[in-house]
Length: 132
Figure 1: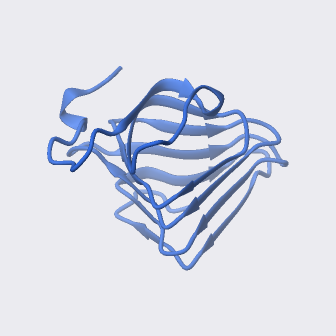
Figure 2: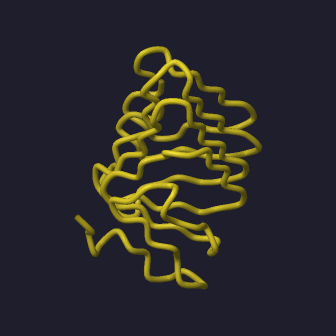
């Protein structure tokens, strides 16, 4: 479900919209990304210098054997409602948060299920209910 309140109106360019989709079906051409629903990382994905807005209860879900790497990115709520979080689903999935990246306004910043690996280095977890 796309929540209209979670599409920022003051962005200097049109964002990429990722609504209930997967990494294999999108490209990050804009500096701004809006995610609503579940975004599935079903292939390795690296994002650099992106401002990412997430709708209420939006979730980033990594499937087995895939990685999400964020460098100098900000993930935050697109409005006054918290988003869910980033979930690793298998021991061979990996989340890397680097170089001044920020994860904020999440109910669950990063959730490791079944031993999924993660690294947070030189970055910030802000205004989250459950950190890791």
